[in-house]
Length: 166
Image 1 (cartoon, rainbow, N blue to C red):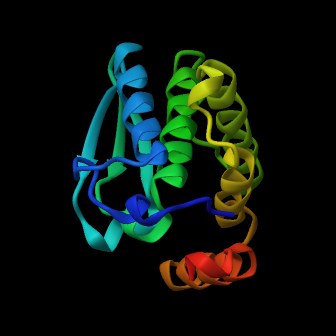
Image 2: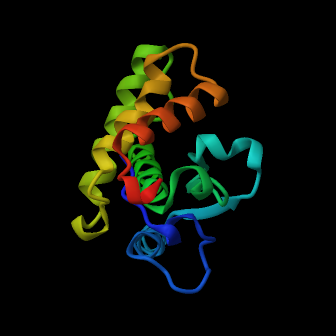
């Protein structure tokens, strides 16, 4: 699920950036260039959620965890940023939160698709859609908690990590 390297779990502005961290920086720069405000959220208790987007008046805002890379790595954080960028584009059409769990799931899928469509292809992580499938589970399963998210993420990555990454 996660293509990563040692540098994927280093702070954003640490020296010797890997291609995954550089892709996050490039994507962040692109999203900002499209008129979206991106803010870092430093709360460890919120890191498992990774990001969220909102609209305040005419301003579209993405809040992205500055510490979630420790859990997910930089390629997943790029996927989160692209997904939230998709939400911001949907806001322009009056599409925000759903009034039911089914409608919310539909909107999350729309944001995944829209984010992929409006982001330059070279910025999309190779496993973007797999990353998004993982996070969709929180809308499909009613008992999604921080503990469950972290446990499921660990199980998923244990299945697909190469022995040299463990």
